[in-house]
Image 1 (tube, rainbow, N blue to C red):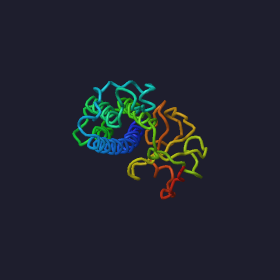
Image 2 (cartoon, rainbow, N blue to C red; image 1 turned 120 degrees about the horizontal axis):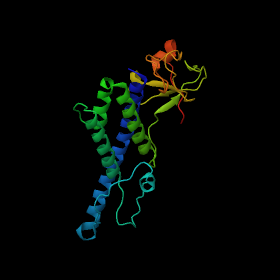
Image 3 (cartoon, rainbow, N blue to C red; image 1 turned 45 degrees about the horizontal axis):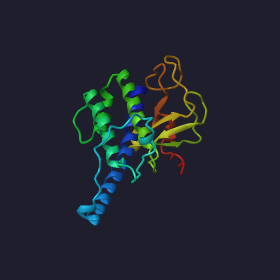
Image 4 (tube, one colour; image 1 turned 90 degrees about the vertical axis):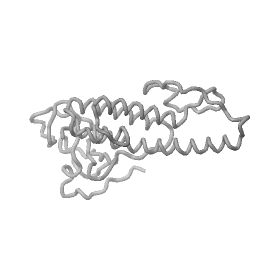
Length: 219
């Protein structure tokens, strides 16, 4: 796969991990609300307003997850999950992804078959959604860990990071310097050098004989 495909696949794995946490929070919240309704009884049960359309990633209300009980309507984890699922369903349908139990899974499975330009666009969409989810309050699963002692195949600096979402065999490596590929003659060692693409390598390709090395946890 090209760098665009690897970047999109890594973003899909990271987003899938974050979405699972969001789903667990929505389930727990629904359970708590159900218990609260039972305890309150039918007369004093709260009435929830209709679901409002959420804003973009810069929406300050969504970004801070306002859950004030003094307001007429509360933004719930379930609503945020539905919002994310709706975005991903649209993206999956747009790229004609195959069938599957979840939109993000459909997208992930379709990425290898996409044209490089489409993969680049999909990667951006997935990265935006992943950043949106992880900006919400709470702890989110780590999706990057430093890989100490291994020089970058491109710049030689030891600032590599393992993108560790998903199964180990799909982990990839990026350089924290953020330098982009210059295409033919770059010398980065990527399987398919693409001008302007972010440098990204398969984990095993970077660390070679040290492929079993374990990234240092950040927390």
